[in-house]
Length: 530
Image (tube, rainbow, N blue to C red):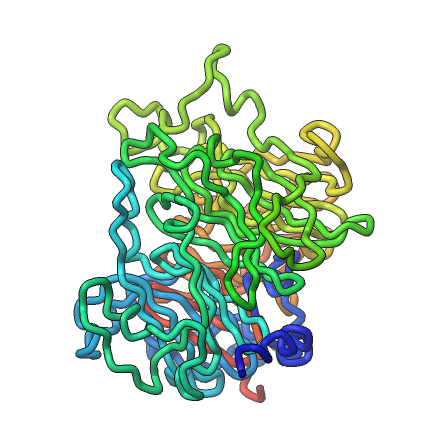
């Protein structure tokens, strides 16, 4: 059976992905957003009236190879593997499909890398939780995770919080099992299954943390999964209740591990992270080998960064992940006011009683939404909150990854408090750390000391991570795309109006720059001869 043969595909996965592909969030398991691609543009025309900056070399002006319509939102970055582009969005552009007229949820698109043509797609309907007090109301934002491609499978955390494994070929090569009910899945509960066609997705397996582990997502589900040794690591999006007062499922795990072939649960963290959640658990895990040990780095919704031992083989029965170290990301000044614990929501700018003036000066506890990034023996991670809560004091940590136990003091290499709250994953290249805060400021600091070299004010809210490629820094915000020169001296090369927000992170693959705005995915080639 073809499904049984997937194991051999996993073993040979490194050979099945093209050398210049970008198959997952962060390119590699360390999650450092640095691309080896060369010849990328610094500017491209987003409209007929746009003009390149005066004096810019023609080699830096790119050309749009194609653009593909997305929905109304795109928060996870696209991924590219084996001639296909995968991108998550919402179902607003499904209105022309009579079979799926009432869908209002997430959408995964698989596009042809050369043309942008839709090869297949998967709509994900909204679900209603039966848990009293739950607030899982932002599913219309679509699929917020970046798809992870591994062999001939693609994995996502869907907008309904399910973890899905899909065939990269969709239904074009038949309906692979064991899951065979795609028609019912796309139609939704209580409705007759839709009739499948070659443009539909092929779900291989699905795992539902809500049903299986009593997870209660808050607002939206979001995580870009990591796959290592045939196992899938993901956070669960477990969160708090609608009044923002109570953790509805404190016993549910924040981090789980599945068999990537079958979707079977093989491990979970048992550190009771969910019992200490401030808001919800969204941070994607990362992985690296440190002093001979393979470690999984995980940003907790409790504001703590964790390192767990990576599993070396798939266990026959579920096991508990072994914690190697923990690092508290909130200093006492962020947690206490005159000896009293600060309520996480005291600084929510939407509250009439909030002392937060939304100027970045408010001091209070933060969680970890960004991914911990590993680079040369250290983990870099930023602290923040849901941007809907408003601005506030953030913190960027540099952690020695070689320790054991509570390394809050012993593992702290440096901290940088010059930034606001951040959703952004830091990017490290050539001795510099680049981090973006919610206010849209790009900070360049020294990777060894945390000394700030420069700050670039983009002028509007930013959620994405800086991409470093070809000596350039690419960053989108609520209204524009910016390209800066990489290095310790600040230099803006170009800025472009995109027509809608660029809250996702850019990627580069096989000589092409990919930009996902809230309306289109742009594929941009290099200069005129590329």
